[in-house]
Length: 69
Image 1 (tube, one colour):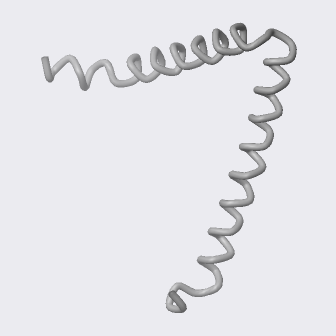
Image 2 (cartoon, helix red, strand yellow):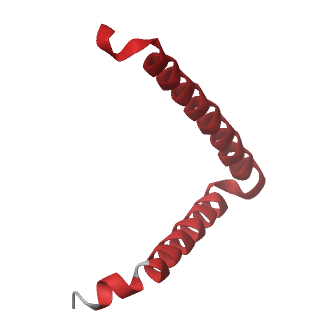
Image 3 (cartoon, helix red, strand yellow):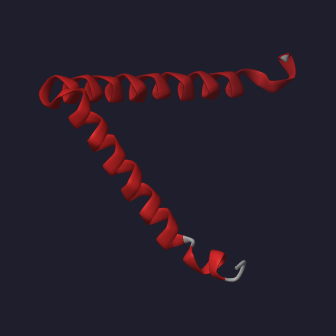
C-alpha cells in the first residue's frame, strides 16, 4: 500500500470528500422535496427523473441496439 504514493491517497481523499458533499446536497434536496410535496409527490418526481434519464440513454444508444435484434 505504501507503493501508491501520497498523491494517490490525496486524490482518493478528495474524491471521497467531494462525493460526501454531493450526497449531502442531494439528501437536503430530497428531504426538502418530501417536506414540500409529501412522500408520494417526491417519489413521483424521482420516477420522472429516472424515466427521463432512461429515455435519454435509449436515444443515445439506439443505433447500437438496432443491430442486435
